[in-house]
Image 1 (cartoon, rainbow, N blue to C red):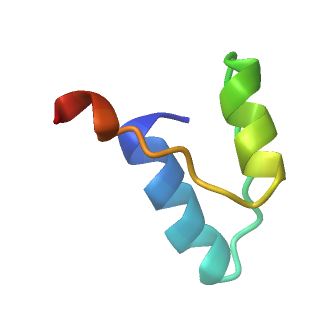
Image 2: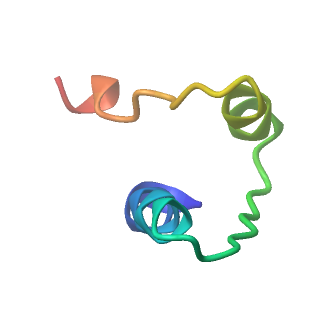
Image 3: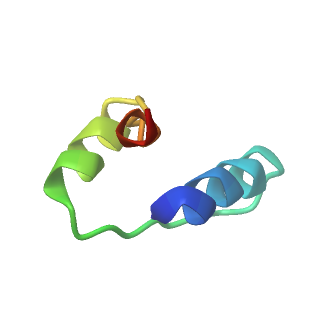
Length: 45
């Protein structure tokens, strides 16, 4: 979903828009399915 796609999808979903997200990384998919958001900024520190 990416750095921009995921937050955008969340905002749209909270506004009532049906959202379908796609990602090829199984770790990210698993994290999102648990209702968590992977902290992608750790690598920037």
